[in-house]
Length: 322
Image 1 (cartoon, rainbow, N blue to C red):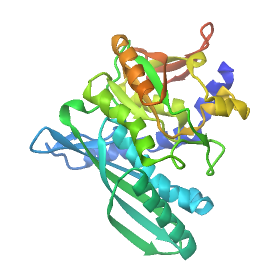
Image 2: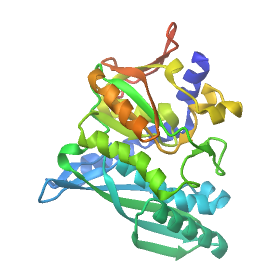
Image 3: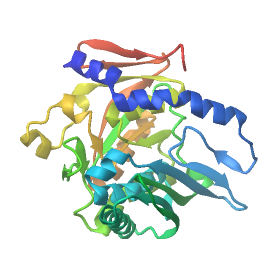
């Protein structure tokens, strides 16, 4: 099992694609205009802009894949709001509003995209305040979410510390989504109050200053998310795969760990914190009906290793490009 999971991580297309973008991000970061108004930018789930008080304005943007739009336009529209919302909550913030860009060549597909966007807007109580729409010969969908947070509460994605423990928090009350067998849907069929209550856990953790770093689990899965956090923080990690729990509904469907770690898990977060704070974090998630466990620790060596409590494999060594 260790070798199978290691091979998956090394060959994960979603991870590889993010790596291929690094030179572009680095060029923009090095050559774009800089301003003292910026609190944090590249490498964060949500960039943060300073205001005149102690509040930060949060900004994040995402594009939905064309293949997803063509296969499930309503879900694509809904996801365009979901992914930005969770980027805001990942750093402890609160979403305020969204803007969208939509292009479509088939009116019926476009209508379903718009219905999905509107549904997501209501689900997460986020108004759509601006947008741009084209009827073109292609499909396009992207969104920008705006939020806010107190400057002292902001949880970065690039400040994991050596000896931090790594927490994985997941909403186990879900089902396999319509979009893919690798999509864990914990949102579409629940009330706004329920899905937002789970996300408020991140607000409480941020306000209590318990975590050093955090990210929401993206389409790179658990390990893709961990790898991004490690590279941003310039640290390594050791993960005990036996500590990664699988929702019982997936176990009943025959899902094993190798498949589970490939999934896009809605309502899920990876956090790092000092050992003395971990039980407090786990309790907050438990109180908000989330499953949370410690799955590993941060180390100073620039690599990712996985173990089963007895044997260990070095998966990726990135000290030469960190």
